Length: 372
Ligand SMILES: [Fe+2]
Image 1 (cartoon, rainbow, N blue to C red):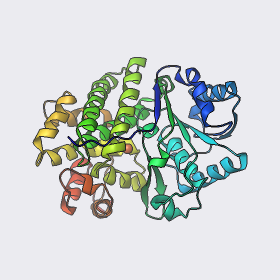
Image 2: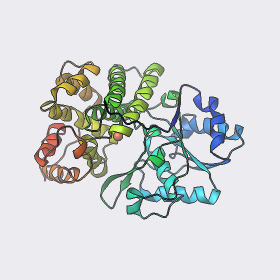
Image 3: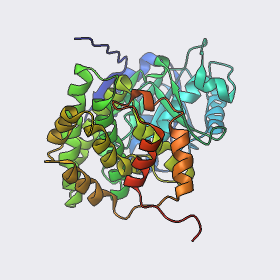
Image 4: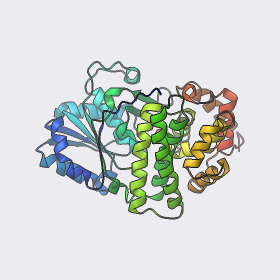
């Protein structure tokens, strides 16, 4: 049994864990740049908790609260400049995937001279500032991954910094920060996590350990997404979704994502469809595509999700997704071509050909005529 597992992130999960773990922050320095989006960290209490913990440890901090959704390179450069001018020794990232991923990129940019292209390719001889991650959505799992996924206008899609040096040194995961998230955000982020678990389970790079974690994550996600469909967004559901999202993050840190993410990034960049929703739209057809060549692992996915067949799996997704966006034949052709150039195809259990990707888009979203 061949297993490779590397997770250098200290993980603390539970209600009140930021305040309870304040002393862990002191080992990373005496000056921190705190990075957030524009508003949610203030509303959900996470920013107050983090700054109180920093104050309690005598750590000076400066706030950078300008991270936009689907952050680009420019905002990461601004944050890196802020970290340097303040003399920050580490970064505390609070938020969904956007602030967390932007913080990882800023941590690299603060220590290396990089062009927009070499930001994604490396090498990074200067290392990176340590990043402490405080997630406030249950989705990306970025708190336990070595990925920073940024909008890359040069390639008109999302590109990934993939480097062990950007694993957060500490993840403080408190599900209470998700308690007021609207249903749409809850669903979209949970669909991202479900996609991580399902894709990770079926990925060529999966192994016995990551598959075990993936089954745990998808079982929790499916069970609790059914509760969300029934209108339950209570604290127990929130805690389970957070646990599952972080667990699914551990899965993709090792097994990586597959063609669903490769295809989904174009839906996000070109059609402004939320990342998790984009994956959720594609996941049902993807499962059927893999099933045709690999029925046994797909049967294990369906069993973990409590579904008798792919029809039941699709029905659960459809109940969460509601009305779907549409694509034109021209968009499908263009996105399919571009998806096949990403690293995601080769990690997919059944290697997708061009016609397969076209068929996956067609089976996932309604097609409209070019000119209507
Ligand atoms: Fe994702």
